[in-house]
Length: 205
Length: 194
Picture 1 (cartoon, each protein chain N blue to C red):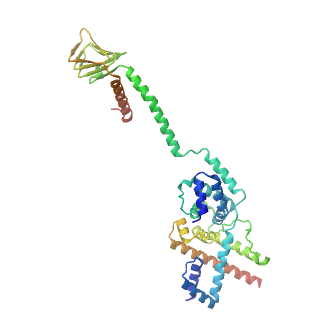
Picture 2: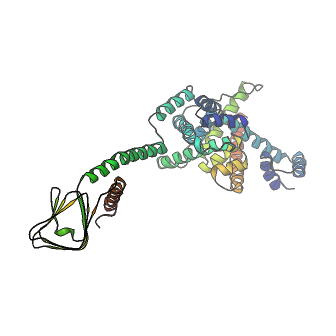
């Protein structure tokens, strides 16, 4: 073993990274070699001085200050998860209140479904087919009155509604009167609400 | 594996503040000393040490019971120190010592040596502190973690996210450099005394 090897091994010995035979070899080299003994001593000193340097007590009140900071930090902070949950709860509550309200208002208003709905004029609860106009296709009317001054070519279904035929008006096709059950009304209202939501989300369609 | 730490962390995770305070009490001196040697002044060391424990607290949820606590703690402290040094590096000269002007007081006084030897020890320690401060930060942290804080090669490698072989190389170089500086200094002294 030469001094170069011995010095590398001195470092390994400091980190308990040396096998037992290697340690013995190093020891016998050290006994014979003065310079390497010096190296060993000074390395030992570096390490023990460094241990001393790592003894610097923290200032008094360290823990108390820290715990105070923690308490200040903790109070206003609501976790992101909790905030998300709160937002969901509010949204659900809104939906629960708003949707029956919407259903109720829809059901209390007259409604008209027609292929040619642009032609038809609404005045209060009256739907008027103006004189001279021709409406083609099927018509469904919920509540209110359908007043035909022009012409209607197609089937008319009335749900809680009446048809008034003006002297010059004409209706070609059949008419059905339906008494709506509450469930059916509700189903219609829900369908209407769904259409509105789709319209809101999907833009103009 | 330190079971006391694990118990305390488990309690702290459940929201027990006194268990957390106990952990802080246990490690504050070590962490403060480490950061002091890393950044070189007491004010910054104090701020960084407080920040270290604040981060421990806010990351309690991410700590898995069974995971060793000490390396985790030192990793947070090391990252904060290195960030801090990186941010302020432009303001200091490369070869300027990082230790501030105040005289180094050594709390540890070994029994036995007389006043003269004590004095010599303290001066050597002050000299070494200065030389440690002059090491590049990534060498300094390896060296401090190994000899001041008794972490293993593997733990240091995990803390710094470098291979074990790199840890060994840095340790070897840092130790060798400091040894040479120290024997140089001693030679000068001995020459003066004679």
